Image 1: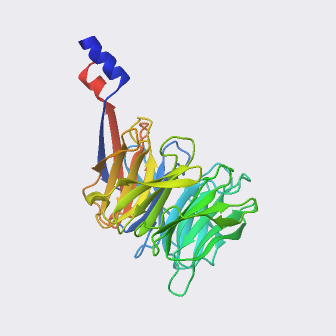
Image 2: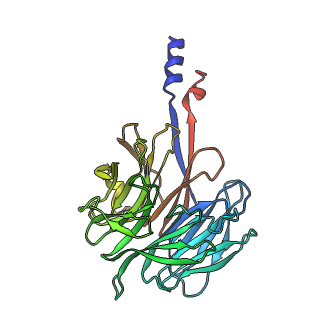
Image 3: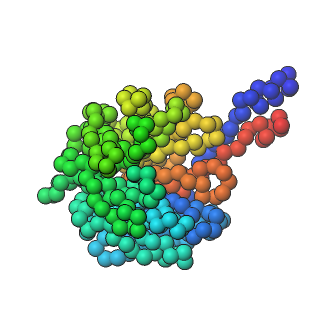
Length: 372
């Protein structure tokens, strides 16, 4: 019998997974990202802060579970809304990209390698800009920038692709102009032509829009992925079902739901991940394998509930949900990165009461019970 149990456990390992909550700071944070900013082998945290701080901070990982607060920028007149961490200039140091709505600007901050950053301007004509993503949009080997702008208040909602011309000068390419109250845009290759397409969360019309990139860096709108995503807010892209093409994930605040949109030859099926008390006011979404089972799991930041929820993929894109936090309020953004170098992805969240690290501890029950 013991041999049989051993064989069963060896084939189907059991894991215990817990998340421990650590508060990094207590200011009103609106977005969060992470990466190794100082090249010491440990990932650091970058966060964007709304008023009264209106700055961008980075938290240096001290390698012992604590963090030291540093500044990316605290320039007067900023209105940080979204950040990305990426090597913009190809010097093997991670830089920071910022969407700032108060001064209608998009910036990138060059990492000087000493914990300091130098501001570079991408655009000062980005009224109501509220999201930023950085990736190589056109396969020319350098990092481009994709932004969305909410619109309203006398301005037009836009989605813009800022093309990197090779020396970190950027030219503006309109993806979408005149859509209604856009809250997010994401770059993802959906059609098999190796060019990044764009998906757009248009919250006023409850529409998840899809724009195919053409060979000349223009975009053609396709049939919307979904037209009843009530109050759609956040987007993420990943191959959720491991079938070889990229899928789209969305969070919708009015119907309190997280969905994935299965891609089948650029046609989409809209499937529910979760809709429960922990996803009330769903706002931000992220996905990766958090439990070593080879499946893609999902995180949701829910603003109204104030929760970070974890949805473990059971292997066939059905999900078991658990709440990770007990102390946060107004959760706006969630991100996954290994902060303690134990090999498992931890969870980082931006909330009204600060930036939080939800430490992922996963252990093999077989070892603990002595079967191995």
